[in-house]
Image 1 (cartoon, rainbow, N blue to C red):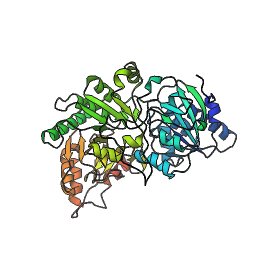
Image 2: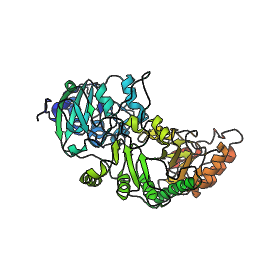
Image 3: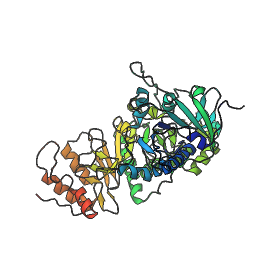
Length: 497
């Protein structure tokens, strides 16, 4: 049956978007992110710039996008502004150089901020789909993100119909949008497997301005393979959780897991999967990586709820070949549901995220290098950390071949405060900060998590701080960072009274 929507080329679709407008992309990470229209939009910007015309757009996304969106638009100098999260090197450079205004946001807040009007009007939503009905029902692909809120708020919608993804994905998504205050009610998720919404996004068909057919695969990067350090971190996380079960602080049936993105996250899941004392468990997370799919195959993960399937092409191909088997074990939700503080606290999620640096009192920096240059953004880590049953942060004890200690006197930027962070784990060991004073936390972190090359310097710093509830020296709090800026290594930081 033919659809009542015009079929457009990516270039024809991009030409409909005007300078200064706000564009919102569906998907979450490169999974389900539109690719053809943003690339054509970048080409249009380059052409207009060559003729002396101004052309920039504001861009909203679910999380990051891929090179065809963030990368292409950054290279074309086509961003008027960007939010809420990114991972692209070209865009990161533009942000840190001051060329692209960027505001970092907790991902659970983005959809409701759009509904509230806090981020201004949304002119266009660009949504990747595997199927569209004439009545305006859209079947998404591998990522949901903020697509429902963007479709509702946008004045006009463009759809990339991607043949890489089968129409049989219908039923994998659970689309639910809360009402705005004062009419908002509880989100009725009581188990990770609860389905509370509809399998499609329903929009007014009059808003759909065209269909662009594509066959571009998700631009999910291959994660670096694990090494001895990441494997040891994973083992330490698994052993900590085993200890919690033995102590009765985690029920023997276990609790749902949220895990961040990257090689440490995959190593942690692998370690949990190979630890017999950890029973089969469920995931309630935002990003579902290769490690999740592998553990689902073995039965170690019974069910997984997320906002995207951010997996390699081979893993996605394998999943699609067994879609009937996985259909009843997976849910993809909007990010305001996958990351909902209300649901996270109700389910008792054990949150495991990665830090860039941790200070002696348990404050965590997960976004900035040397206090000023953003890496990616806070993402959903804050949504889970603040509301978790147990909040765990992992990191190697050193970075850049030992030139950087990830354990520092004071974080150069703080995303998660000591009041939300409960456990720090490196390859050196575990610091359980629950029920500890700031000084007790400092001793635990130095003893169990810091690298021997920096442990003595951290002790020297602590000796300089004198008295106080949270002991700090204003003269030396950033001595490690200053030493790195001066010499390229944190070693030898001057710490003398």
